[in-house]
Amino acid sequence: MKKLTLLTSAMALVLSCSVAAKVTQEQANRLGNDLTPLGAEKAANADGSIPAWTGGITAAPAGYTPGMHHLNPFADDKVLFTIDKSNVEQYKSLLSPGQISLFELYPDTFKMNVYQTRRTASYPQYVYDATKNIATQAELVEGGNGIVNAAIGVPFPIPQNGLEAIWNHLLRYRGVAASRNGGQAAPTATGAYTVIGFDEQIMFKYSEPNATAEALTAENILFRFKQGVTSPARLAGTALLVHETMDQVKTPRQAWTYNTGQRRVRRAPNVAYDAPGTASDGLRTTDDFDMFNGSPDRYNWQLKGKQEMYIAYNDYKLHSNDVKYADLLQAGHINPDYVRWEKHRVWVVEATLKDGTRHVYGKRVFYIDEDSWQIHVADLYDNRMELYRVAFAHGLNYYEVPTHWSTLEVYHDLNSRRYIAIGLDNEDKMYDFSVQLSDADFTPAALRREGTR
Image 1: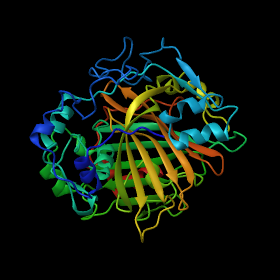
Image 2: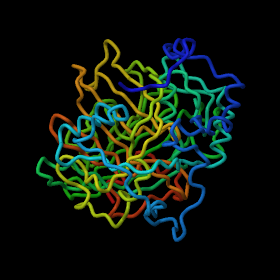
Image 3: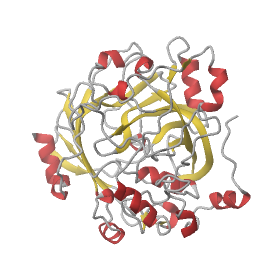
Image 4: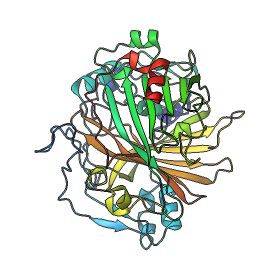
């Protein structure tokens, strides 16, 4: 049995509502005091295995300069213990059903090397300030499919229902803009794979230092995203453009694709929900990307509470440019020797499909890191309510920003016994968070240029 943080009867009533009352100023004053600036419990857990948060990483390691793959600040840390099929029963209360299923599917090869917990998540001061400022003001629009009275910060640092918690993930700070190269691979049952190369740019309008709630509401844009396929040759030139809206009732997501065969930019209203992800071999949905994205309108959301859990954290070893794709990618799952698991507190959010709507996932359970609002584990169930997939975000602190974000996302299909790894960049250049982007870089005309260059 998982141990979730107990909720008072009053709070439980609030969590069952689709839209809760705003938090009071007294509650918001806890931010930066007994709670971290983003709403996590600042204190250590009872036995000290999860330490107190003391600010996260506040400086880059000696020798690091932006543009490098991020140096491992904890290279001297040793494995505390390893979870494998022989002892997994001992740790089940700290694992999700999806995690446990991998020990059953791959009893001879899957394991978790557990390390000292380090609460490294940190963000710019202006994000902390904005979070406290909007904590008593941010609201969900009718149905929870959009947000108003919020900019820059985490809108609901003291969440009162599942929708608020998932919007915290959707709006978490990941810098103002980023350019990234890399790719994805979906090994076959024998371990053979082809790396699909991507060139991606993203501009987070919500996170710009001068963003205001009024301007965001008027423009109704959260972020703009552009993706071009660079390899292999048969797919190169295919491109995608997305404008993600703040109020998805007012204006749903806008998307366009460029197809090299047709040499045309077309509207792509189906780039949403459970449409297959780009070149994914059917191993993930569009709204799996970034662990969850897009409109939450097809699900009922419930905040179940908080629990302690092993999640992939401070994965600098996995992220290193000393690691080759051939070392990392293998049949069944990525090489577990490169993965660092740590015990952290996570919010548990359960999404169940609404009556009369359609999606390949009948239920989704998200485990959200309390320090960053990054979804780190997702258990995905089919419409028979049987486990279908499990996804992991391998997180680290990009300390030049700073922000906690994934370096790799891995989606396991339990039926086909295959997985897709997204965000491979060990053999490519590192994210550029200093890139200067403008709205003109995210137009249909810019998409066509992306596809034909």
